[in-house]
Length: 634
Image (tube, rainbow, N blue to C red; front, side, top):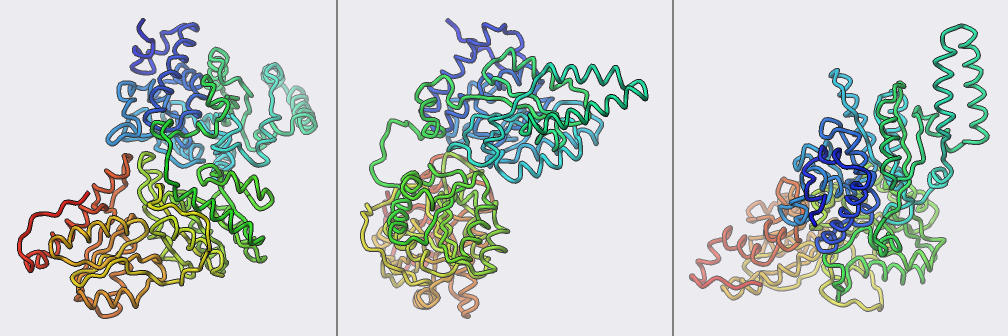
């Protein structure tokens, strides 16, 4: 029997289906999500929860003429299936395949690219305002989750939208979850929201009848005042959205397609001169019992989820080390911006509940909150992804580093993250961190060094960042003695007289492999683990560069303003402009999604790439020892 889904080539095909067929289609979509995402990896539970909502949206609105803006975009898989990308869905998050988020270059049905939370209302308001300025007519809808609604940017946009009274719709997809359960006072408000549709209809009829006379208008005004007083006693949560300038509708069952359609039609044709706040209740992981039972685990699944990782990840070692430190030092607390699971903080939250703070998707607040704690002798550790730290650069500069406060930034997912793609690659942190005065910046080469650097950071009495990748570690790291690593001191991993290879973090390992391969060609390369990007180990670096006159830097970061730039600046300031230098890193571009090893190979960030850089840029080394067969590097 042919699937209905196989006949859906665009949103227009949905409008041919009856209610029974729509239910069948929803079931087929869930089956497609489960079978594909558990293999490709990606965000499963969030997409299972919006199947009916997405169907209803595409039946009521006319995409791409009408603009559907998805917050974060990780729940847009159903949207992709219904907008002409079904045949490519198996390429999801694969190299040169579909993105795991919305992407303007991928489809005209994606009017705004996303990947970070709390952006949809701002973007949709901008689109709606441009529509009005140009005298065009189409609907604009922002779909935002209750987790993203905790972000301050969302409230800035809601405040502006209510002030402008722009005609567009904000749909709140309320499943009480972001990745972890949604935190904050807003959660309690959402749980108490309700609307009596009959009261709204009666109010509209009364306005039409009474507005035609002076007495009627006075009665109407009195009624409005009575309504405000009544709502202040009985509907305080709903009143928040109305006071912001929105017409509130809901809450609605997000899995009832007919009711959703009827309500969305009402919202679309609403004639009032203010935006609509449309509240939908959904179940994250709907229709897949494992995901419904554990929406946190199934929020994002790895490639072939049944495969078990044998070696610990940097994230796991960070969390285990922090747990050890917190057990010994009562000053230490940890802060996360709704990423407790991603940062492996579950055990810490359980064992140190009074010293664990999940602030919601509020990176700016997390940073200044930490600064306030630090002024009182507390040692806060902010566990955050590199890509999300970008959202709090001003707070990092103004609130933490300007005051030289001892806040630790534990920056996970630094470097190439792989399948999550260009919105999540941690490729800018070395550039934006090293420009800030008072901030110490470090990167461990392996899990054991991560343990020592974290301990060092907590005892540094200055702000310090420790950045580490989304990978397993090369060595096991059992708990043991923690020691401070001298700030600003690197280490020589291999001696060599012909050229110096300076590395950041885990790039030390492919550099060592490259040095062994070069040695087979008669080229002896020194390999240095810089360990600290700021301050640099000037004495070590300058001594090696004077000796060899040649240097290659290797970093998983953009080249502009990164580690290599700092080394070249150091050489220049020391008068070593004659030192020949080459920098390996990310060129001036965004990096797409794909397997980490393939992306690293593309940018020369593996052993063969380092060997090629040395051979191609320093040909005199090869000619000085004679032509030899190319070394094999695995």
